[in-house]
Every structure is written in C-alpha cells, then in structure tokens.
Length: 331
Image (cartoon, rainbow, N blue to C red; front, side, top):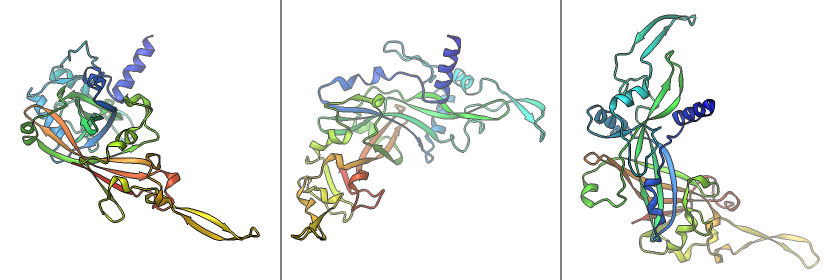
C-alpha cells in the first residue's frame, strides 16, 4: 500500500496535477451543450511573461493559489500559503557542490526565493504555463473555458540533476464562463496559439460530453452554414458557401477506361465535385486562439478566432501533406 501511494504521488508530481475539475464542468449537463472535451496543453507566454507575473503576485500575496496535489472537498477550494508552495518547489534548499570527479566538495544553503530561482524556472519553464482548457459547443457556437491554470517549474535533486517538469501551483480559478465586455476590455493580450486536434485519436478520457459518438468536427458540422462561421478555400482564399463544399477539395479519383475487347486504354477523372464534403474526409483540425489575462480578477480566457481543416491521409491525394484545405473564421 505504501509503495502504491508513493508511486501515485510521484505521478502527480511529474505529470499533470491531481486536482479534480468536477466542480467546474457540471455545466456540460445542460441541454444547450452538444459537445464538450478537455483540451489540456502547455504554452509559453513570454511577452508579457504570465508565469513570472503570477509568481510575483503570489509572492506579494495579491492572488490565491492551490497546491496541485490538493484534492477538492465538495465545492470548496483549499488555498495554500506562499510558504507551502515554496516548500513544494524547494523541499530541500541545500545544494551540493560537485567537483570534476563527481565528489561532493561542499553543501550550500540556497538564499534565493524558490519562486524566482533559475534552478527551478530555467530556460524551458520560466514562461511556461499549463492550461486545462475545456472546448465545448453551446447552441451551435464553439467556445473555450479555462477553469484555472498552472505555472510550471523544473524538478531537480540537490545535486542539480533535473528530474522533469511539474506544476508549481494552480491559480486563476473561475466558475464564470460568460465574461462581461468590461472584463474583456481590461484584459492583457498574451499571445496567439495554434493547437492541433487529431480527430480520429481523441482520447476518450478527455471527453466530457458526446452525442451519437461524434467527434468535435462532426458535432460542429451541421452549424457551419450559420452566420457565425465564414468558410474560405486555402488554395485561393476565396469565401465559399457551406453548400458548395465538395470532395474535390480533398481528393481525386481516376477511373480506368477499357476498350470493347477489355484492353486498358487509360483513365478518366470521376466527378468528385458532385459529392458533398464529408467530415470523415478531415483528419485534423487546428484551433487558433488569442489568449488574455485579467489582472484584477486573476483569470485567463481565450477567443477562438479560426479553425483550419486538414484532409485525412486516405483522402489527401490532391492536397500536399500537412496543408490545410479550409479556413473557418468564427465571428
């Protein structure tokens, strides 16, 4: 039993945090929500450096934070003191000094604040945050919700050996999915990002709500004809009505032509343009977003601005590999 607990603790330390999102995703039970999935990812926000900003605010006790290993109790969130978070980052402030032969020559006690030490916030982690984003469809509109976010740090031994990357603390807890225009106006633009979603390999454990076994694109497809979406061909950047989408965008089919005696004379193209484009012909979708931080409320949110659709490998005979065929703008 003790070995099992230690193993689970190490998994929580070096991978994603163990904090349950149940209290934040009950909204998916609404009949207005057609589809919902978690899309967790890590991002580098360097200018402005969101990680540094929230570490500075935590040091001044301007924001509240939670230890990543802290489980929820009912609907309550157990906040941690800054010293508890420092102790998680640097449980042993002693650093071993090692010579060229690998011998320990001295032991030095760190005086630098762990929240700002380059040992823990190095080139890789100094501007890295993890976002457990929820992407969902509500009344035919694609939306994003950020229940909280986490700053990342480098886990290392007292000898300076890096063990991996973990979450230092969670912050920015937000149960309000619909933000006022005033909150949005007073928020900082952090950066734009592109996240690739492989539609045929979406992990089932990330799904929060799914109807009829549909993936994200299939659930969105019936709504693309509505005014909140504009569709453009990537080969010409010409706007195209949803009704004009056809299989000619992703594939071509050559049909063999035979003479009366059965001799192969050549081939002719099958008019795939007469066939409507099927969601199954799309293998990947790239979600393009702009990210914002509201300092007063200490919350993170994003606007999904466009979607890029890539053909599935078995449908991409007429499209160069890795090239999108359609851009869908969200109004």
